[in-house]
Image (cartoon, rainbow, N blue to C red; front, side):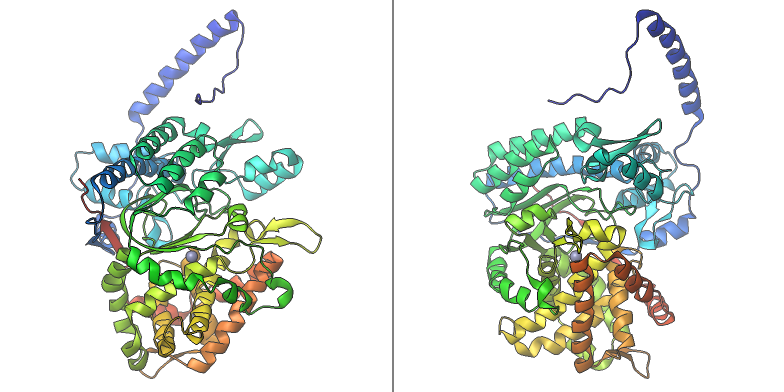
Length: 568
Ligand code: ZN
């Protein structure tokens, strides 16, 4: 049991009574102020918000529940309930102002506010992820540190404080703490103490789902995960998660650090509630048998190639029945590779999960319309869902390849993400894309995938780039793709033909993929922040060519807005 952290100090009776008078007066002032205070001060023009919202095309997700037992469905319903709390937790992580804004939108009698509410619900806050986080409510830029740090705290203040208080470094930089300012001190508050009521409710629901399920692996995961929510040490449940072997594939907890644009330290709550596609999963498991081969095939000097990462790497294909929090905000996830904890990866490896119903919906609604407009005839004729889906798979596999824990030249043991800091997400996403296509071709040569898929793979790789770049190049995935696109254009591997359409040179692309992969891997192996910065400064730029192409796509949907299946 945890109680809410008290931050008041105790005094004797006299000072307490005196204090009480002051508190009462203060309360009155606060109440009076609140009556006139609005959480929403300004709104972007309604037509603009409608147009942005329309960029996400609604899709009723297909999810086959026919193999599930009555108990499985009951378990799903409880986990979906827990996930709705995850939504509320994430909303607070994005901004502490969010609950007030949401309440005001919900209570509004103005029918015009519906679209602002819809947009707010999709974005988990007043910032439009599709337009570089431009605010559509209140003209206030999104704080880099979201709701994880004091809004006015600078990087310098944080780093200075840690230099002066090295004993507080671990807690302040920790992935599961919120940083607050108390007088001139920065303090780290663990998530379970910062959000006690919601965390406790999630724990209850996980425990009750664990009691219900007859799937022993899921029971174990849910029981341990429930305990871990109360300590914010997720190691044991992350290990148990890798062993799930039933009909349901469940992820629930704080994982990704994308929301912390200040340091990429703080993890955001999310959940994936999915049903396993056993037939497809078995097909792809074959790929996992080649992990050691893929690791030794990495295009980098042998001295950096050794990896102590565990290479148990289950791959699952699933259908998403519900998602929540970080992963649901804005753009939908097609696949993920978890856990991110390097200690778990070293001990056991990581698991890739492919969300096939999401991938199919995106391919049909967003991907095909783009390639129809931008690709030259030959690559256009060769794009396929299979090649697209396989590259997504190989992207996820590639997150688990290459350096993780590293040793710096001075002997310091650290991780790539700690060293590359804010640049890490962009470099890592770029690496996963480039290695993804590199290892895809490698597996064709091993006859895991048909050899004649190579041109298709390259065509689909090129065709898919502008789907990511459209999301903006400041975001990790879009930024990573901008690096690849500009690099390949520079090397003559991507070409613009006479009609302004994109084409590719297979031979040059082969070489350029290997050389870019090598640069990225060496940056990671050395934890070289300066080299990461210069690569990003040079290639993560919006060129006139890219702007022209994006302009052509303006009227197309950017992503899907899933409508989840009813489960009863
Ligand atoms: Zn990725």
